[in-house]
Every structure is written in structure tokens, then in C-alpha cells.
Length: 213
Image (cartoon, rainbow, N blue to C red):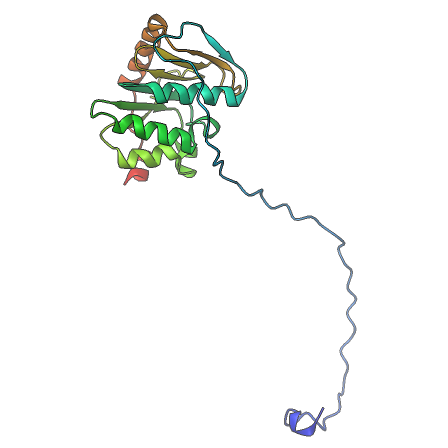
């Protein structure tokens, strides 16, 4: 090193004491477990081909993609009312651009259309900024979300009622399977009565109010 580059006062000063060597032991290899990135599913869902109001057969389904197809078909074909009873707006079934678009078209098709949603738990939907919660910010007069009354026994199932003819029912929350009806006014009327009773006893959710502000 040239003298001009040497810090002043250190060039001619001998090192009196050397630092003691430090022994280092490597802990070895270790794995870093980062959470998997969540990739939005941008693939459009295909609705089931059955017409609401004329298809008489009960359609059973077992797989998630079948449940989505019936769910989407009922929403797309509804003309007056949609009623959804859900545990937490299951993301695999409800939180998709195809569902958001179908609900938007339904609600904007007429000032008389309404979508009512009853939830047992809103925490996950709020945390993940669910598509239907975002939609409810825009369409406050036609999309209403309320929470099931915690004092009443909940039904451990999910169902969607479309007008006075269509019904999708998943009887077990931990299973995607269930059935869809496209023209069964008797069973729809029975399920609608259950929904109305639950709705009349439902409560407003302060977490939802905070989300919508």
C-alpha cells in the first residue's frame, strides 16, 4: 500500500497484540420454509348446462369443479333473488372472478334483484378481501350480508337458493359434494322458509361494517 493511502498515525505503529483466533463451528445446512405464493385462478369457470326452471332431474356432484359449475349456473340464470347460506364464503366456491362477474350482472340487471348472504364467520372473508365483500361496497342497496345469530344453533351446511326454483345444497362443510335442483319449487320453498327465519334473527357484524366503511 502506498504511503499516501495509509491512514495517518497507523503506518509506523507496530501491532502490539494480535487478536486471539476465534473458532467457528458451522451449524450445517438448514431449510427455509417460505409460504407458497398464492396465484389467482384467472381461468373462467364453465357453468353447468341445465336450464333453471325446466330441468327436472336432481343433479348430484362430488368434485369441487362440479360444485362450482352448478353454483355458477344458478347465479347466472337467476332473475329475481339469490340467497346464500354459508359458513365463511368458502373461497374455493365463492371467491372467483366468474362468481363476482355473475353476481354483478345479476344485481345490475334490474333494480328489483337482490342477493342476501348469511355468514357464520366473516373473519376469513374480511382478511382475504373476498370478492363478494368488495362487491357489496359498490352495490349497497341490492347486496346485503349479515351474520348468523350466535345464540341460535347453526346448520353445518352451505346452500344457495335461486329464485323460487333452484337450489344447491352441500350438506357437509368439509366435503365439496352435494346436489343441485333446477326446478323444484316445493323443496326450494322449504329451504327458503329456513333461510328467512335465520335472516330475521340474524345480527349485523361490526367487522363487516368496518370493512365496508
